Length: 580
Image 1 (spheres, one colour):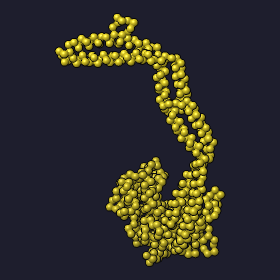
Image 2 (cartoon, one colour):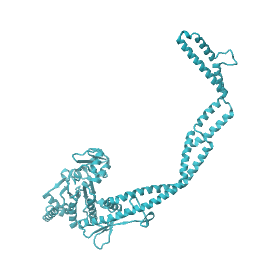
Image 3 (spheres, one colour):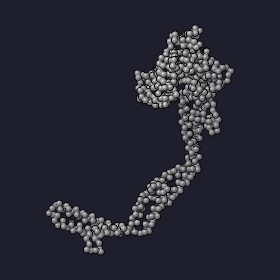
Image 4 (cartoon, one colour):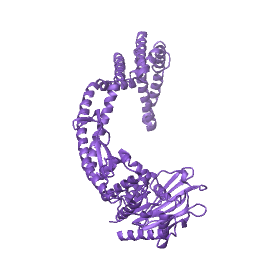
């Protein structure tokens, strides 16, 4: 199976590193060097490439920014390739180029395959490419939530499937509970709202407004308020068009137009153009007659009754009282009334809704209890297998008598869900508290690893857990920083041997201070400072032959030329080669 491989990292202006290239390869690579030489910067650099937090304090003093560039060969079709290509990244002959820049002011930029991308995308790719473990990860393993997550990860679909069902029911129950709380805790506010709605609807119903009525009444009020002027104007206009009976000698428009029509009618047969004009004047006469008739009817029908005007103004005042409270015009008032009726029905139906929600909540709680039990059963079965696998790994790490187990327990809670005949507290991941226990030797009671494991034992437990994961949920590259902390002697040899075995199926990079671990590496890198205290391009080099023996001697005795240390170093290398 072709796996992803971290081929190279170039680090510039990061911590003590001025400009250095870390060349990596498949298999087991050990990174060694004096304390403070910058070994941990290898871990820090990879963390930045994989979307880790950008700390401006990491930028080398005097530099504007720190830059880390990486090359990772990725097989075609890998999920990381698909995600990178979706982001517009391009691969260089199967190699994914990643770059991260951190400025001294704290700004951070990320590039993937030649394209600028969000830093969060690098973190997404990290899940599929590299598993980074350091001292903080060991401390993270002490958290119960991380221990439960580790168990769930090991169990795979056996836990993931019931967990997904449980999570869906849990979200629905939370939503229903929230709605119930809103209905019950806001009962007084909702009752007050209902009373206000009823008052408003009653007030509107008493007036019985009609759509557009306010516009019609405004026009009528304007007309009634100027009735005398309108009647006078209509009468004068009628007289000008049709004549005034009180002035029989007066000349009106109808008479004049009729005279013009008669004059042209007499000669229209002699000229078609003049005949057309005669026809148009005839039309004008008809139109004048119609308008004059309408003016006469308007004047006769005009109602100047002051009582009607008072009634109109009173009606307008009633409508205005509504528009001041419920809308800009009568149309808005009617819309408010429609919405108010719907809202009142909703509020009045709260009692029915309360009953429905309560019944659904109770049913969901019962369902959730059953799903939680199934989830607990799946975790319990997986815990036995996981604990046995980790225990077997510890035997290979110089802890032959250690026993690992899991305690899966629940906390009673009167407000919880019923599981196994008793109410227990529950959360989004189920009802289980999962705790990893360690009995370091026969006769010792199992104790939580936070209390029962030394620093060295915790390192080995973490390594054992990761090795077990490698068999069920492999990651292409593992980077361990000081995984051998607190370990020495035979245990250190066994850790080196186990890391070498893990490297047969994955790329393993280990930052270590133990020669027993470094000796098992397929490749050893030395990080060393120059005289000015910085690490340059020549400060990270591959050790082979005599150089590797000298470095292992230094790690063993602090003296590169000690014959005893050299003999021990050569013995370690021979032992490691024999194991391969």
